[in-house]
Length: 342
Image 1 (cartoon, rainbow, N blue to C red):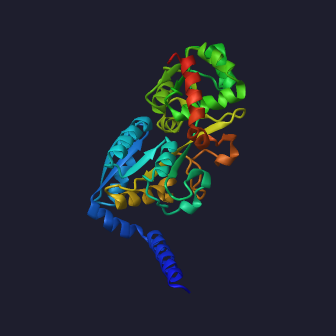
Image 2: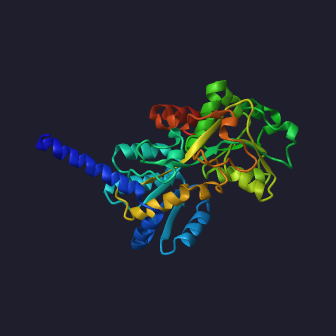
Image 3: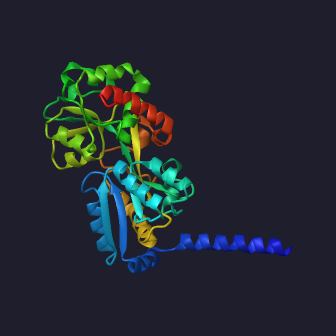
């Protein structure tokens, strides 16, 4: 064997050893390192308060590691990350965003740490990056929802066409599909199946579009301000569990879109070990089994009262859709014209 071959073999062996060591790093070892870092800077998108209970549980399990949360919509938080990347001064350790396409772009830019959390092997390849740049932490269905006090079960819409009935005029609400990717997936599914003429009928219903997230949509229905929506997410079952008059419904006619909430650690994160510790903990079966949403892990049961995703008519093209910039731009432009945003 030549000297060059021996050197190459040593390099490959060394890299393999490093990879093995990284994968063998235990939670206890990560915790010891995280305690030295003291802090985790988390950018967490989602409804107000959606991260609070997890942060509380994490801090109780791992005292000495403080979590600094910046919450808000993914479409606002990702802009702050972009500013940090442009300034080459990363302040964020871990991002948990709905805008999964951001992670793909940041991976291409070399901005993400390649890290496969414990249990990654149980996650469907459609829900994670093959190299470990990011992984889904929840799989969220976008279903119908209605107010059970104001709408009889017999009148619950069975397809998108039913929302065009006169009884729903002035009574419908969704997030703004020109700003929210989950809503965009719903409207994309509808116009793909029923054509753009559907939007003429839908706009004649005088629907409300909100820019403050799906929690606003569910709250409006639960409070009786609106009657129904085809744009309901995980807030709805939580409100139902709290005794509110709201019911989620899977369509038996139309495909149900799903959107992913993903997590990624930045390569130049100031507290990388705290980020690894949190992501490992968050994706573990114990946390995933009590999240209230579908888990990307195949070994976690669906939320109570629901069947596995494979039991429903699922539109699983979300990641492909939002990663197609030209398609997204065209959809948003056409929908903006209907909504009145130019």
